[in-house]
Image: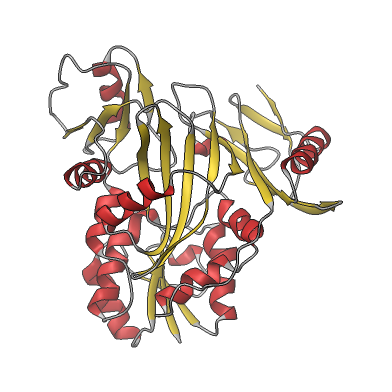
Length: 379
């Protein structure tokens, strides 16, 4: 089976997740990327242009599957899969999920939920009289970059995002107050299976940096599934974030790919199934696997830089077991690196993930590891 995988920069999800999964399934993988020097044995291609992508695949040879885990390449990859008559996502759903204003419009038009939202194109005036608090975000942003809570002076906040992202549209929407949750799903176009979900802990407002995710598989699934149906997001992996507000659940965003920041590996550890293989199987035309899911507990703790400075002490990569708990530490920076605090996910120094039979034992193992292996930043 010949699998074409489109990518931008290298990621752990692809390198340590999807590529080993593809090999386990017997796939011959060709990576198509605009950065071939950063991927082993990759083919250079303007993967942001579906015409170039289709042309490259036609030249290289008939595909059995075309797949991406990139936020930025979902629509382009879906168009290529459709051109070759392969299983894949609806490009319209990919576009509506990526564009936060289109997400709001589609959910409102379908009668799923109403969340106040305004799209401001470059040069549009900032409207007066909007009810605070508000959230300002790039229309197609990722990793919490340039997202902020605004309680006064909306104009200054919009201008700040515009300076950071010239030429991009900005979305202003109501602030959704309440616990932040996720739902992780996998679909084959007919069946949409819930794999579980997480409770998300954020850092201090006005920024929205995710500091930890704790396994919380319950929740108002039907509302989220109705939102995914309205968007047409029923194929492959999907990571949906929502808030349990006083008015009921409200969608924050739909990321039409597997959950990131090493929580994809955590998800696989908790439910105890080969999640990366399952995702690729549906792209190869198979139905969603029906096997049972595990019932353990897990957490992912992002170690976040609380200041700018130079890292003077940094623990290395490690995997260890303490009783019934398995723990992994993945450094994202190294001693000697200079860190500039951005109040985004780019401030992550490392990630600890741990799984075990219950929360108490997992928490104790994480706390012990952090005390034993601290990250130190000197100004």
